[in-house]
Image: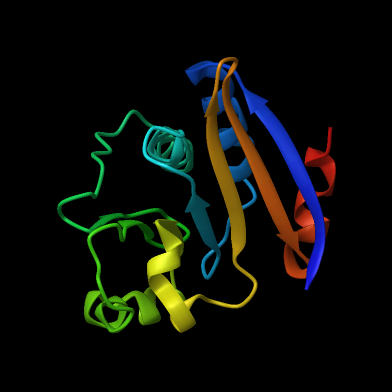
Length: 154
């Protein structure tokens, strides 16, 4: 059930990193963030900044476009950064081990429409778009995230 929606303008990479850092501090194992939007909308830049913030260091965070999944060891639990663009069937999600990761790790999923019925309940959906003023993000806040994200409203 959707509790609310948050909108943000992210005019540059510094603003994107600040927003990702704020969200990173709220994450815990079993959280899934669905990163939607066309190519060039800012999904990977956001994921990169969030991962670096969680790890507390400058980390090489390549796009998982070709590897499909990149994992990072976080003291609180692993972080899975997935790009499902090249998947053709939701059953391939199971082959990647995502069903288990949803229950143990923090998961950042680009192209989440490829998950089909495997989309975890209660996932946070973020829809990115490129604009003349930078990037925008609309966050659909499900009930289970409402209290954690309450302070992030404009």
